[in-house]
Image (cartoon, rainbow, N blue to C red):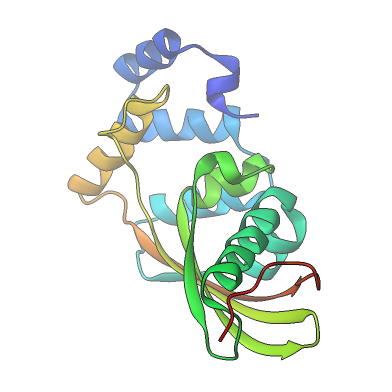
Length: 186
């Protein structure tokens, strides 16, 4: 659950109008983030104004979140269908917030691009190496229910009281390519 699950846009905007930018983010953390979750850790890092880079456990994300895993598998299979499969082939899969089944990961990372490279092919199995390099940032320009929360975060960055950072991570994913699956002829 997130803050927007408890409140409608009107109530969220009233809270934003009454609270300081820092307290808006504290309230969002308190109402919407798992106590020991990744989203809370990322927000804490953001509010500590450190910047830099933060390693994310992409392997854990891909193993835990079946919707993200399926989105990546489908993206790789579509590429195999369109251009064939061979070691070294690569591509990028755009993960949007609706692609998550686990809210903590959705809040922690948001939209991201997962790059993949075929590391090995064995019979009907593709071993893909996944990487993510993405900025932890906010998007107040988007017309969403929590827009004013994003604006508060952006205000803190502009005031030098919070800092975005770069998230990076790696994972491996085995993708079974069924024998009946269409493949581009070489």
